[in-house]
Image (tube, rainbow, N blue to C red; front, side, top):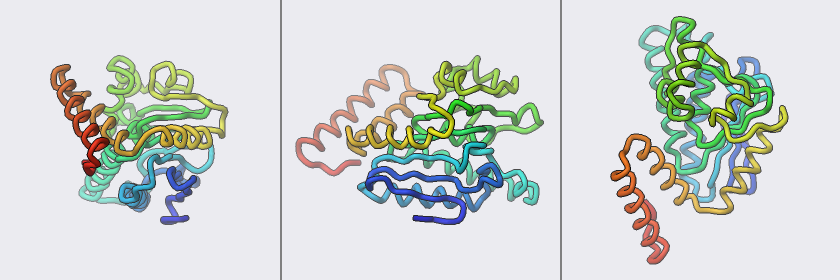
Length: 250
């Protein structure tokens, strides 16, 4: 089923949706229309109680996503560029905070906004030819879709400095060793493996449980141990009451 020309959606057994950025001629770069199409798919999935997991990938094996569509950006005014950045930030937050488990299936380049898109996902699977980087600073620009903080959370400050400030690109093997991705698979196999992984994980738990676990992880990044423990206890109380008394999830 198609949401737009920019994003293709495939439904796997009703519980897993696969969203494919279908702009191979632009290396699956994100212009405003593509951002809006992805956002619409995320909102639709959030309102469907049957959907437990999402797989996000790009068309072809050349690039997962080349980031912001620079051709479109060059035609924008300064105010339009700021709005484009804000729109991209909102998309990344929607992915990060989505109630479903979100798995990125990465082939080829995941550079700039493409890496930021992958970082917003919960888990990442990559083909062995994938490359990861944030080249903006070395080109006189700055990452604007979460790369300056999500990359550090994922791989630590020293490695993030090498990528962000030093222009280092990570191969799939290096990204695996750094903890950035969960699995490396044969080139061309990322979407299949990610979909199988998403289906397997979704079948073993509920969407509410994943939503609560994700919220705890995000809160815990900024919390000390005492606050983290309190949040876990609160979440356990909510879930236990829901399981016992059928209290609606929150």
